[in-house]
Amino acid sequence: MASLQSKTIGELTGAELLQLLQSLSVAQPTKSQKAKKDPDAPKKEVSAGVAAWNLFVGEVLEELKAEGWTHPETGKPVTRKDAMAEASKRKAEGNADYAAASAARRAKRDEQLAKKAAPASPAKPAPAPPSPEKEKPKKVLSPEHLAKMQAAAKASRLKREEAKKASAAKPAPVAAAPPSPPPVEEEEEWIRKTISGKKHLWNPSNNHCYRCEADGSQGEWAGLYNPKTQKIDDSVEEPQDE
Image 1: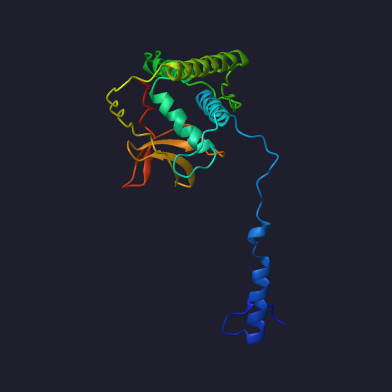
Image 2: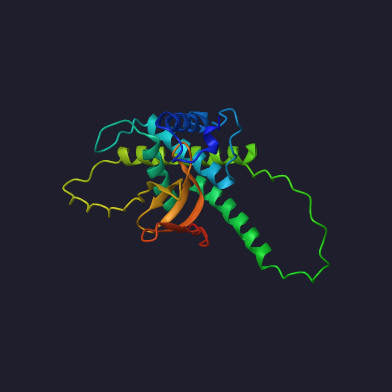
C-alpha cells in the first residue's frame, strides 16, 4: 500500500487527505514552543550619560516627594514622569549637578571626534584576520564621581530652600502694584513612541529622539525622527547642551 506522501492530491481519499493535514499540523511548532527570553540573563549596562540622567531624575523625584509636591491638574502624588519633566526644566536652566554629567558627555564626544579627525596612517600590508574580540564593557560612573554629583545636588537643594525661606521672611510691600506674572516657559514634552520595533522618547517640538529604557527613563541619543518617513536619522549627532 502506497504511503500518503507518495500519492497526488487527486489520488487521496477524503479520509486520507484529512489524516495528512492533521499530521502536518502536529509537525508545525506552536507559539508556545518558541524559545523564551531568559529572565536571569544579565542586564545590559547603560552608558555614563544615561546613568547620570537616571541619577539626576531620581534625586529630583526624592526632592519633590519630600516637599509633598502634587500634580497641579490632577492632584495626584508626584510620579517619575513628573520628575523627568522637572529635571528637563532644570537641565535647560543650567542646573549645577546636571552640568557635571553634561560636561563628562561632551568630553567623551570631543575625544571621539578627535580620533575620527586624526590623519590616516600610511598604508600598511594587510594584517592577518584578527581573532574575535570580546565586547568592551561600557564606562560607568565611579563612586567618587557619583558622590560629587550627589553633593552638588544636595548643595543646590539647600540653596533653593534658603532662598524660599528668605523670600518668605520679607514683609509684603504696602499698596504696591501687583507684579506682572513671569513669562511661562514651555516645558519639553516627550512622547513614548515605538519606532522600527523599539521604544523611543520623541520630542515633537524639535524631533529629538532618544532610546526609552525599560523603566521609562531617557536612554542614549538615537537621532532626528522624521514624522513623514517615520524613520530616525542616526547620522545627526546629539545637540550640545547650552
